[in-house]
Length: 454
Image 1 (cartoon, rainbow, N blue to C red):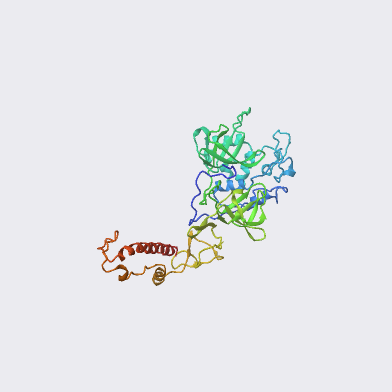
Image 2: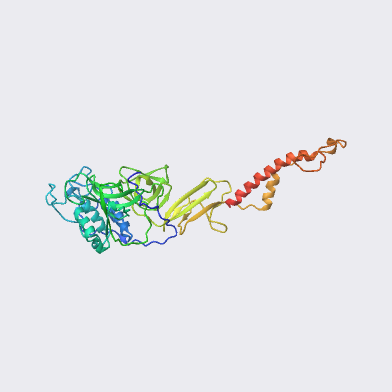
Protein backbone atom coordinates (compact mmCIF):
# COMPACT_ATOMS: atom_id res chain seq x y z
CA UNK A 1 0.00 0.00 0.00
CA UNK A 2 1.33 3.45 -0.88
CA UNK A 3 1.77 5.53 2.24
CA UNK A 4 0.70 8.67 0.43
CA UNK A 5 -2.76 7.21 -0.12
CA UNK A 6 -4.25 6.43 3.30
CA UNK A 7 -7.65 5.00 4.16
CA UNK A 8 -9.66 6.20 7.14
CA UNK A 9 -10.64 2.64 8.00
CA UNK A 10 -14.14 2.96 6.57
CA UNK A 11 -15.24 2.92 2.98
CA UNK A 12 -16.09 6.37 1.70
CA UNK A 13 -19.71 7.10 2.61
CA UNK A 14 -22.30 7.61 -0.11
CA UNK A 15 -22.60 11.35 -0.49
CA UNK A 16 -25.13 11.74 -3.29
CA UNK A 17 -28.43 13.45 -2.43
CA UNK A 18 -27.23 14.23 1.10
CA UNK A 19 -27.20 17.61 2.82
CA UNK A 20 -23.99 18.47 4.64
CA UNK A 21 -22.99 21.24 6.98
CA UNK A 22 -21.49 24.14 5.05
CA UNK A 23 -17.89 25.14 5.68
CA UNK A 24 -17.40 27.52 8.61
CA UNK A 25 -14.76 29.51 6.79
CA UNK A 26 -11.22 29.53 5.54
CA UNK A 27 -8.35 29.03 7.96
CA UNK A 28 -7.23 32.22 9.69
CA UNK A 29 -3.85 31.77 11.40
CA UNK A 30 -4.15 31.92 15.18
CA UNK A 31 -0.90 33.87 15.51
CA UNK A 32 1.34 36.27 13.61
CA UNK A 33 3.18 34.10 11.13
CA UNK A 34 6.84 34.78 10.39
CA UNK A 35 7.80 36.92 7.42
CA UNK A 36 9.70 33.97 5.96
CA UNK A 37 6.70 31.60 6.12
CA UNK A 38 4.18 34.15 4.85
CA UNK A 39 3.71 33.92 1.11
CA UNK A 40 5.28 30.46 0.85
CA UNK A 41 3.63 27.47 -0.77
CA UNK A 42 2.78 25.95 2.63
CA UNK A 43 1.22 29.18 3.86
CA UNK A 44 -0.89 29.37 0.69
CA UNK A 45 -1.88 25.73 1.22
CA UNK A 46 -3.01 26.53 4.76
CA UNK A 47 -5.13 29.47 3.65
CA UNK A 48 -6.79 27.32 0.95
CA UNK A 49 -8.38 25.05 3.57
CA UNK A 50 -12.09 25.60 4.24
CA UNK A 51 -12.93 24.48 7.77
CA UNK A 52 -16.03 22.31 8.01
CA UNK A 53 -16.75 22.53 11.73
CA UNK A 54 -15.94 18.84 12.21
CA UNK A 55 -12.90 18.96 14.48
CA UNK A 56 -11.17 15.72 13.47
CA UNK A 57 -11.65 16.38 9.76
CA UNK A 58 -10.36 19.94 10.06
CA UNK A 59 -7.26 19.05 12.11
CA UNK A 60 -6.27 16.44 9.53
CA UNK A 61 -6.95 18.87 6.66
CA UNK A 62 -4.64 21.46 8.23
CA UNK A 63 -1.96 18.83 8.83
CA UNK A 64 -2.16 17.46 5.28
CA UNK A 65 -1.82 20.96 3.84
CA UNK A 66 1.71 20.94 5.22
CA UNK A 67 2.84 17.63 3.68
CA UNK A 68 6.47 17.87 2.61
CA UNK A 69 7.44 20.80 4.86
CA UNK A 70 11.07 20.28 5.92
CA UNK A 71 12.84 21.61 9.00
CA UNK A 72 15.72 24.04 8.55
CA UNK A 73 18.97 25.15 10.13
CA UNK A 74 18.09 28.77 10.96
CA UNK A 75 15.27 31.32 10.94
CA UNK A 76 15.94 31.80 7.24
CA UNK A 77 14.61 28.26 6.66
CA UNK A 78 11.14 28.73 8.16
CA UNK A 79 9.70 28.44 4.65
CA UNK A 80 10.07 24.64 4.84
CA UNK A 81 12.12 24.44 1.65
CA UNK A 82 15.52 23.36 3.01
CA UNK A 83 15.52 19.69 2.11
CA UNK A 84 18.78 19.09 3.97
CA UNK A 85 17.90 21.05 7.13
CA UNK A 86 18.51 19.15 10.37
CA UNK A 87 18.45 21.66 13.26
CA UNK A 88 14.69 21.71 14.03
CA UNK A 89 13.96 25.28 12.90
CA UNK A 90 10.28 25.32 11.85
CA UNK A 91 7.37 27.74 11.52
CA UNK A 92 5.35 25.59 13.90
CA UNK A 93 7.68 26.52 16.77
CA UNK A 94 7.04 30.22 16.11
CA UNK A 95 3.56 29.79 17.63
CA UNK A 96 5.11 28.72 20.94
CA UNK A 97 8.07 31.09 21.03
CA UNK A 98 11.80 30.62 21.37
CA UNK A 99 13.06 27.88 23.71
CA UNK A 100 16.32 26.21 24.60
CA UNK A 101 16.04 22.43 24.56
CA UNK A 102 19.72 21.87 25.09
CA UNK A 103 20.40 20.71 21.54
CA UNK A 104 22.89 23.44 20.78
CA UNK A 105 20.62 26.01 19.16
CA UNK A 106 20.30 28.16 22.28
CA UNK A 107 17.08 30.10 22.86
CA UNK A 108 15.57 29.89 19.39
CA UNK A 109 12.91 28.32 17.18
CA UNK A 110 15.22 25.32 16.75
CA UNK A 111 13.84 22.63 19.07
CA UNK A 112 12.14 19.24 18.69
CA UNK A 113 8.84 20.01 16.98
CA UNK A 114 6.65 16.90 16.68
CA UNK A 115 4.35 18.01 19.53
CA UNK A 116 4.50 21.63 18.39
CA UNK A 117 3.31 20.58 14.93
CA UNK A 118 0.35 18.60 16.28
CA UNK A 119 -0.65 21.46 18.60
CA UNK A 120 -0.20 23.98 15.76
CA UNK A 121 -2.65 21.97 13.64
CA UNK A 122 -5.19 21.89 16.48
CA UNK A 123 -4.94 25.66 16.90
CA UNK A 124 -5.29 26.46 13.19
CA UNK A 125 -8.33 24.15 13.05
CA UNK A 126 -9.90 26.19 15.89
CA UNK A 127 -10.07 23.28 18.33
CA UNK A 128 -10.61 24.63 21.86
CA UNK A 129 -7.35 24.55 23.84
CA UNK A 130 -9.25 23.37 26.92
CA UNK A 131 -10.22 20.17 25.10
CA UNK A 132 -6.59 19.32 24.39
CA UNK A 133 -4.84 20.32 27.61
CA UNK A 134 -3.21 23.51 26.41
CA UNK A 135 -0.15 24.51 24.42
CA UNK A 136 2.11 21.51 24.90
CA UNK A 137 5.39 21.05 23.06
CA UNK A 138 6.36 18.05 25.21
CA UNK A 139 5.06 14.58 24.31
CA UNK A 140 5.58 13.31 27.87
CA UNK A 141 3.66 16.22 29.44
CA UNK A 142 0.87 15.92 26.91
CA UNK A 143 0.41 12.19 27.50
CA UNK A 144 0.41 12.81 31.26
CA UNK A 145 -2.44 15.30 30.82
CA UNK A 146 -4.51 12.74 28.91
CA UNK A 147 -3.92 10.11 31.60
CA UNK A 148 -4.48 12.30 34.64
CA UNK A 149 -6.80 15.15 33.61
CA UNK A 150 -8.22 14.48 30.17
CA UNK A 151 -11.43 12.88 31.40
CA UNK A 152 -12.52 16.22 32.92
CA UNK A 153 -12.67 17.63 29.40
CA UNK A 154 -14.13 14.65 27.58
CA UNK A 155 -10.72 13.33 26.52
CA UNK A 156 -9.69 9.69 26.92
CA UNK A 157 -6.40 7.86 27.00
CA UNK A 158 -6.03 4.33 25.60
CA UNK A 159 -2.86 2.29 26.04
CA UNK A 160 -1.75 0.21 23.06
CA UNK A 161 -2.34 -2.91 25.16
CA UNK A 162 -6.02 -1.97 25.68
CA UNK A 163 -6.91 -3.35 22.22
CA UNK A 164 -8.35 0.05 21.37
CA UNK A 165 -9.04 0.73 17.67
CA UNK A 166 -7.81 4.28 16.99
CA UNK A 167 -10.06 6.75 15.21
CA UNK A 168 -9.27 9.64 12.88
CA UNK A 169 -8.16 12.71 14.78
CA UNK A 170 -6.76 10.75 17.73
CA UNK A 171 -3.28 11.69 18.91
CA UNK A 172 -0.85 8.79 18.84
CA UNK A 173 2.06 8.62 21.31
CA UNK A 174 5.30 6.73 20.71
CA UNK A 175 8.47 5.92 22.63
CA UNK A 176 11.72 4.86 21.02
CA UNK A 177 12.54 1.23 21.79
CA UNK A 178 16.17 2.18 22.35
CA UNK A 179 15.40 5.18 24.57
CA UNK A 180 17.39 5.51 27.80
CA UNK A 181 15.38 8.44 29.18
CA UNK A 182 12.50 8.02 31.62
CA UNK A 183 9.94 10.04 29.67
CA UNK A 184 6.71 8.17 28.92
CA UNK A 185 6.67 9.35 25.28
CA UNK A 186 9.16 10.97 22.93
CA UNK A 187 7.16 11.34 19.69
CA UNK A 188 3.59 12.12 18.65
CA UNK A 189 1.40 12.18 15.53
CA UNK A 190 -2.20 12.44 14.33
CA UNK A 191 -4.23 9.37 13.36
CA UNK A 192 -5.81 9.38 9.91
CA UNK A 193 -7.53 6.05 10.44
CA UNK A 194 -7.13 2.33 10.91
CA UNK A 195 -7.66 -0.66 8.62
CA UNK A 196 -6.84 -4.35 8.83
CA UNK A 197 -4.68 -4.01 11.92
CA UNK A 198 -2.70 -1.05 10.57
CA UNK A 199 -2.89 2.54 11.87
CA UNK A 200 -2.13 5.39 9.45
CA UNK A 201 -0.78 8.73 10.63
CA UNK A 202 0.58 12.13 9.68
CA UNK A 203 3.54 13.33 11.75
CA UNK A 204 5.95 16.22 12.00
CA UNK A 205 9.65 15.79 12.78
CA UNK A 206 9.79 12.24 11.45
CA UNK A 207 12.66 12.13 8.95
CA UNK A 208 12.93 15.90 9.58
CA UNK A 209 9.69 16.71 7.73
CA UNK A 210 5.90 16.43 7.71
CA UNK A 211 5.02 13.04 6.28
CA UNK A 212 2.68 10.05 6.24
CA UNK A 213 3.39 6.83 8.15
CA UNK A 214 1.83 3.47 8.99
CA UNK A 215 2.30 0.96 11.81
CA UNK A 216 0.89 -2.37 12.94
CA UNK A 217 -1.44 -1.85 15.89
CA UNK A 218 0.75 -4.25 17.84
CA UNK A 219 3.96 -2.30 17.16
CA UNK A 220 5.67 -1.82 20.56
CA UNK A 221 6.87 1.60 19.39
CA UNK A 222 3.29 2.79 20.00
CA UNK A 223 2.58 3.79 23.61
CA UNK A 224 -1.09 4.74 23.31
CA UNK A 225 -3.72 7.13 21.97
CA UNK A 226 -5.35 10.32 23.16
CA UNK A 227 -8.95 10.83 22.04
CA UNK A 228 -10.24 14.41 21.96
CA UNK A 229 -13.88 15.47 22.41
CA UNK A 230 -13.99 17.21 19.04
CA UNK A 231 -16.99 19.14 17.86
CA UNK A 232 -18.72 17.18 15.11
CA UNK A 233 -20.54 18.13 11.94
CA UNK A 234 -22.23 16.21 9.13
CA UNK A 235 -19.53 16.29 6.46
CA UNK A 236 -18.54 13.91 3.64
CA UNK A 237 -16.15 11.21 4.81
CA UNK A 238 -12.70 11.45 3.26
CA UNK A 239 -11.10 8.37 1.74
CA UNK A 240 -7.48 9.24 2.47
CA UNK A 241 -6.16 6.26 0.49
CA UNK A 242 -8.35 6.82 -2.57
CA UNK A 243 -6.78 3.94 -4.47
CA UNK A 244 -10.08 2.86 -6.01
CA UNK A 245 -12.46 5.67 -5.12
CA UNK A 246 -11.67 9.29 -5.89
CA UNK A 247 -13.94 12.14 -4.80
CA UNK A 248 -14.14 15.84 -5.61
CA UNK A 249 -12.50 17.96 -2.93
CA UNK A 250 -9.12 19.39 -2.01
CA UNK A 251 -5.96 17.40 -2.78
CA UNK A 252 -2.25 18.04 -2.27
CA UNK A 253 0.13 17.16 -5.08
CA UNK A 254 3.03 14.81 -4.46
CA UNK A 255 6.65 15.72 -4.85
CA UNK A 256 8.20 16.01 -8.28
CA UNK A 257 6.80 17.45 -11.47
CA UNK A 258 3.57 16.18 -12.95
CA UNK A 259 1.36 17.15 -15.88
CA UNK A 260 -2.00 18.82 -16.30
CA UNK A 261 -3.82 17.44 -19.35
CA UNK A 262 -6.46 18.93 -21.63
CA UNK A 263 -8.82 16.01 -20.96
CA UNK A 264 -9.36 13.13 -18.52
CA UNK A 265 -6.57 10.97 -19.98
CA UNK A 266 -2.87 11.31 -20.70
CA UNK A 267 -3.40 11.11 -24.47
CA UNK A 268 -5.31 14.41 -24.58
CA UNK A 269 -2.11 16.44 -24.52
CA UNK A 270 -0.27 18.37 -21.82
CA UNK A 271 -1.78 21.73 -20.86
CA UNK A 272 0.50 22.73 -17.96
CA UNK A 273 2.75 21.39 -15.21
CA UNK A 274 1.80 20.63 -11.61
CA UNK A 275 3.31 22.54 -8.73
CA UNK A 276 4.92 20.06 -6.33
CA UNK A 277 3.25 19.94 -2.86
CA UNK A 278 0.59 22.50 -3.89
CA UNK A 279 -3.07 22.16 -2.93
CA UNK A 280 -5.58 21.85 -5.77
CA UNK A 281 -9.37 21.80 -5.67
CA UNK A 282 -10.76 18.92 -7.73
CA UNK A 283 -14.26 19.84 -8.94
CA UNK A 284 -15.01 16.67 -10.91
CA UNK A 285 -13.61 13.15 -11.13
CA UNK A 286 -13.65 10.85 -14.16
CA UNK A 287 -11.88 7.55 -13.57
CA UNK A 288 -8.50 8.30 -12.01
CA UNK A 289 -8.42 11.90 -13.32
CA UNK A 290 -9.58 15.04 -11.57
CA UNK A 291 -10.61 18.38 -13.06
CA UNK A 292 -8.84 21.55 -11.93
CA UNK A 293 -9.10 25.22 -12.86
CA UNK A 294 -5.75 26.70 -13.82
CA UNK A 295 -4.56 30.19 -12.92
CA UNK A 296 -5.55 31.54 -16.34
CA UNK A 297 -9.09 30.23 -15.86
CA UNK A 298 -8.74 27.30 -18.26
CA UNK A 299 -9.77 23.78 -17.31
CA UNK A 300 -7.28 20.93 -16.96
CA UNK A 301 -7.22 17.34 -15.74
CA UNK A 302 -4.64 15.67 -13.48
CA UNK A 303 -3.92 12.06 -12.57
CA UNK A 304 -5.09 11.72 -8.97
CA UNK A 305 -2.62 8.92 -8.34
CA UNK A 306 -0.09 11.68 -7.72
CA UNK A 307 -2.27 13.33 -5.05
CA UNK A 308 -3.32 12.86 -1.42
CA UNK A 309 -6.92 13.85 -0.62
CA UNK A 310 -7.38 16.48 2.09
CA UNK A 311 -11.14 17.06 2.15
CA UNK A 312 -14.16 15.75 0.24
CA UNK A 313 -17.08 17.65 -1.29
CA UNK A 314 -20.70 16.58 -1.45
CA UNK A 315 -21.09 15.38 -5.03
CA UNK A 316 -23.38 13.77 -7.61
CA UNK A 317 -22.67 11.15 -10.25
CA UNK A 318 -23.61 11.48 -13.93
CA UNK A 319 -23.48 8.32 -16.03
CA UNK A 320 -23.82 8.11 -19.82
CA UNK A 321 -24.86 4.68 -21.13
CA UNK A 322 -24.80 3.60 -24.78
CA UNK A 323 -24.71 -0.17 -25.07
CA UNK A 324 -21.25 -1.32 -24.07
CA UNK A 325 -19.98 2.27 -23.98
CA UNK A 326 -20.33 4.26 -20.76
CA UNK A 327 -18.84 7.35 -19.14
CA UNK A 328 -19.15 8.10 -15.42
CA UNK A 329 -18.18 11.39 -13.80
CA UNK A 330 -18.61 12.59 -10.21
CA UNK A 331 -19.27 16.32 -9.96
CA UNK A 332 -18.98 18.44 -6.81
CA UNK A 333 -22.25 19.93 -5.60
CA UNK A 334 -22.90 23.22 -7.39
CA UNK A 335 -20.35 22.49 -10.14
CA UNK A 336 -21.06 21.81 -13.82
CA UNK A 337 -19.88 19.25 -16.37
CA UNK A 338 -19.87 19.40 -20.17
CA UNK A 339 -21.12 16.31 -22.02
CA UNK A 340 -18.31 14.89 -24.18
CA UNK A 341 -18.52 13.89 -27.84
CA UNK A 342 -18.77 10.11 -28.33
CA UNK A 343 -18.80 8.03 -31.53
CA UNK A 344 -22.21 6.36 -31.62
CA UNK A 345 -24.49 4.64 -34.13
CA UNK A 346 -26.14 6.51 -36.97
CA UNK A 347 -29.40 8.06 -35.86
CA UNK A 348 -28.18 8.97 -32.36
CA UNK A 349 -30.35 11.83 -31.08
CA UNK A 350 -28.67 12.68 -27.77
CA UNK A 351 -28.85 11.65 -24.13
CA UNK A 352 -32.09 11.08 -22.27
CA UNK A 353 -32.96 10.39 -18.63
CA UNK A 354 -36.13 8.61 -19.69
CA UNK A 355 -39.32 8.91 -21.71
CA UNK A 356 -40.47 12.50 -21.97
CA UNK A 357 -37.26 13.92 -20.47
CA UNK A 358 -34.99 16.54 -21.97
CA UNK A 359 -32.55 15.39 -24.64
CA UNK A 360 -29.00 16.49 -23.82
CA UNK A 361 -26.43 17.04 -26.55
CA UNK A 362 -22.64 16.77 -26.64
CA UNK A 363 -21.14 20.09 -25.57
CA UNK A 364 -24.11 20.90 -23.34
CA UNK A 365 -23.32 21.83 -19.71
CA UNK A 366 -25.12 20.10 -16.85
CA UNK A 367 -25.21 21.16 -13.20
CA UNK A 368 -26.59 18.07 -11.44
CA UNK A 369 -28.76 18.28 -8.35
CA UNK A 370 -28.96 14.51 -7.90
CA UNK A 371 -27.40 11.37 -9.36
CA UNK A 372 -28.26 11.15 -13.05
CA UNK A 373 -28.24 8.27 -15.56
CA UNK A 374 -28.54 9.29 -19.22
CA UNK A 375 -29.02 6.74 -21.99
CA UNK A 376 -28.39 7.12 -25.70
CA UNK A 377 -31.63 8.06 -27.48
CA UNK A 378 -32.55 6.93 -30.99
CA UNK A 379 -35.65 7.57 -33.18
CA UNK A 380 -38.69 5.59 -32.11
CA UNK A 381 -39.64 2.85 -34.64
CA UNK A 382 -43.33 2.37 -35.56
CA UNK A 383 -44.91 -1.07 -36.05
CA UNK A 384 -45.33 -0.37 -39.79
CA UNK A 385 -41.63 0.45 -40.17
CA UNK A 386 -40.66 -2.65 -38.23
CA UNK A 387 -42.95 -4.84 -40.41
CA UNK A 388 -41.56 -3.29 -43.60
CA UNK A 389 -38.00 -4.07 -42.53
CA UNK A 390 -39.06 -7.58 -41.59
CA UNK A 391 -40.63 -8.16 -45.00
CA UNK A 392 -37.52 -6.83 -46.75
CA UNK A 393 -35.23 -9.10 -44.79
CA UNK A 394 -37.31 -12.27 -45.08
CA UNK A 395 -36.59 -14.53 -48.11
CA UNK A 396 -39.53 -16.54 -49.40
CA UNK A 397 -38.91 -19.75 -51.45
CA UNK A 398 -40.70 -19.96 -54.83
CA UNK A 399 -43.67 -22.32 -54.82
CA UNK A 400 -43.20 -25.55 -56.76
CA UNK A 401 -45.60 -26.21 -59.63
CA UNK A 402 -47.70 -29.34 -59.78
CA UNK A 403 -45.91 -30.19 -63.00
CA UNK A 404 -42.58 -30.41 -61.20
CA UNK A 405 -43.99 -32.60 -58.49
CA UNK A 406 -46.04 -34.89 -60.68
CA UNK A 407 -49.57 -35.91 -59.85
CA UNK A 408 -48.77 -39.61 -59.54
CA UNK A 409 -45.79 -39.21 -57.17
CA UNK A 410 -46.45 -40.34 -53.62
CA UNK A 411 -44.78 -38.14 -51.01
CA UNK A 412 -43.83 -38.90 -47.43
CA UNK A 413 -44.92 -36.69 -44.58
CA UNK A 414 -42.31 -34.11 -43.64
CA UNK A 415 -40.44 -35.12 -40.52
CA UNK A 416 -40.52 -32.39 -37.98
CA UNK A 417 -43.64 -30.77 -39.43
CA UNK A 418 -46.02 -33.04 -37.63
CA UNK A 419 -48.23 -32.79 -40.74
CA UNK A 420 -50.27 -35.30 -42.68
CA UNK A 421 -48.07 -35.66 -45.72
CA UNK A 422 -48.79 -33.21 -48.47
CA UNK A 423 -47.41 -32.42 -51.87
CA UNK A 424 -43.73 -32.53 -51.03
CA UNK A 425 -43.53 -28.72 -50.71
CA UNK A 426 -43.97 -29.10 -46.95
CA UNK A 427 -40.61 -30.82 -46.60
CA UNK A 428 -38.76 -28.08 -48.51
CA UNK A 429 -40.75 -25.35 -46.79
CA UNK A 430 -39.64 -26.83 -43.47
CA UNK A 431 -35.98 -26.03 -44.25
CA UNK A 432 -36.67 -22.63 -45.77
CA UNK A 433 -39.13 -21.81 -43.03
CA UNK A 434 -36.44 -22.54 -40.38
CA UNK A 435 -34.00 -20.11 -42.01
CA UNK A 436 -36.67 -17.45 -42.28
CA UNK A 437 -37.55 -17.91 -38.61
CA UNK A 438 -33.89 -17.46 -37.68
CA UNK A 439 -33.82 -14.17 -39.55
CA UNK A 440 -37.02 -13.04 -37.89
CA UNK A 441 -35.72 -13.91 -34.45
CA UNK A 442 -32.41 -12.15 -35.08
CA UNK A 443 -34.14 -9.05 -36.42
CA UNK A 444 -36.64 -9.10 -33.58
CA UNK A 445 -33.79 -9.16 -31.10
CA UNK A 446 -32.21 -6.16 -32.83
CA UNK A 447 -35.51 -4.25 -32.59
CA UNK A 448 -35.79 -5.19 -28.91
CA UNK A 449 -32.30 -3.90 -28.23
CA UNK A 450 -33.02 -0.69 -30.13
CA UNK A 451 -36.26 -0.18 -28.15
CA UNK A 452 -34.50 -0.90 -24.86
CA UNK A 453 -31.92 1.76 -25.69
CA UNK A 454 -34.78 4.16 -26.33
